[in-house]
Length: 196
Image (cartoon, rainbow, N blue to C red):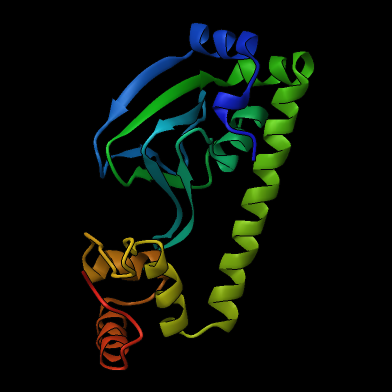
């Protein structure tokens, strides 16, 4: 995937000249579903969780994470088409954002081949993420989804080091706190996972 730091210097200068750099604390919502996307956030450092919400059943579904040097496909679509966001985004850890004005992304589509490559790679990566999410929710057991999710929190010795509540984990894997609690206990008893 093409990251921000791989863009040509001239384009990076353009981005920095017209963008607003902001530091956001962990746990802050940076985009709500329904927000008009006047900017596209580039994650300069940190991590952002992108998710959809269903108010009828009071649940969220994690779509993907956006890490340093990346931007959000859903924000790019909403910004490019001048529409409202269909997703919400929350910082996982303290995060630095570069807020790029939406009107500029259309201009850069014409002026920079590298910008087009960045967007195409972004779409391909997020498409893969979304297909994986659909596959997991449709065909995999909660225990399997939980193991895959926890793999992202393993330290160098293979122990899991995570600073999230059962409710937050359940939210991320589209389950309930009770099911996550039971599944974690079972996985630990079966020696399939080990916490630091």
